[in-house]
Length: 164
Image 1 (cartoon, rainbow, N blue to C red):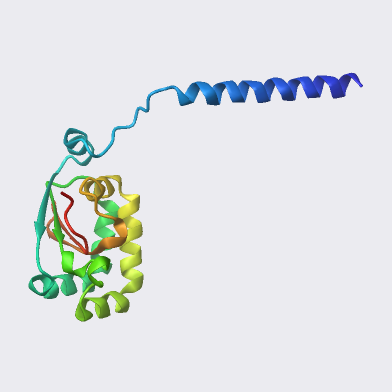
Image 2 (cartoon, rainbow, N blue to C red):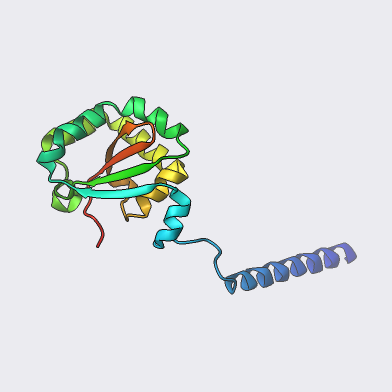
């Protein structure tokens, strides 16, 4: 009977301690910085993030080439830790709200669906690139392709509209 009573008291003390700890953590201010603050973005990303908007037909061929080259570029995404510049090219007429990418791009995306999925997975896993994309309110699922203009300059094609 004594062992049961001791076990019950220990369990109750543990439960009370956990509840107290949880309640005290709720009142603490969060230490993480949001990516809405440009200074925080600059510190996290450490790169200039530029935005450009193009109509789909103006960028179709470039996006198709980028999709075809995803296999090589995914390896670079895995290893990249610094960039001088990140350009996000918005293709608002390819967004889901507008009916999705044009047929030429949609066909390439389906042909290379595994590479596109791998790219998105790698972008989520790379803090530098994830925060660069997220800082401009682009969802990872909207990234169509990427290209590297040079070793330190990345271009991201997104089927999204720029945030205001």
